[in-house]
Image (cartoon, rainbow, N blue to C red):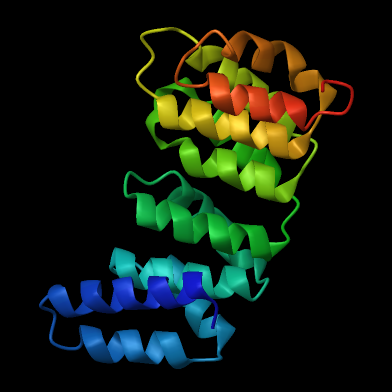
Amino acid sequence: MDEELRSLTERLRAEAVASGVPDAPAVFDRLSATVDYDALAAVLTEPGQPLWARELAACRLGAAGDRRAFESLVLLLNHRDPPRCASAAHALARLGDPRTARAAAALATNELRVAYALYPVRLLVELRAPEAVPALTTTLRRRLDPHDPYRRVALACVEGLGTLGDPRAVPVLTDALAHPALAQAAVRALERIPGER
């Protein structure tokens, strides 16, 4: 079990116990132990399932490469709770669904949900998909307003563009040099782009 899955399991076990539903711990144990992917997929569509159960099922399916988890994982990637976003991003990166990068790019560039764009940005960098550089460039450009409150998203874009090393990012990274909170990261990112040293 990798560290992300271990952290997910511990967090969701605590949620199940804290729910106060008498059989929740037993349901949790069953879902975390089963190798029946059809049973896990059923949790995603059955009405009345608690969020912790849906997240556990979706992340287990995603880590196993079962594409039935895709829609649930995308919803979790855009959740207000950062640990849920992190777990969903981890599972989506392992899912291997060709729709993932497109969905992450749509979430990263959605100005109405920019407060939750951090994990979609990080996922795009991990996937190294064709959508990554255009989405990160667009998102960063919008964050360069001096009064923009989403500095963590901006910093993730700068760092991600450096990791990707694509020359198309040079103009927006050059503009980021003028922002004190981003300047050092922008210098490092530009140094990683061929021809920009």
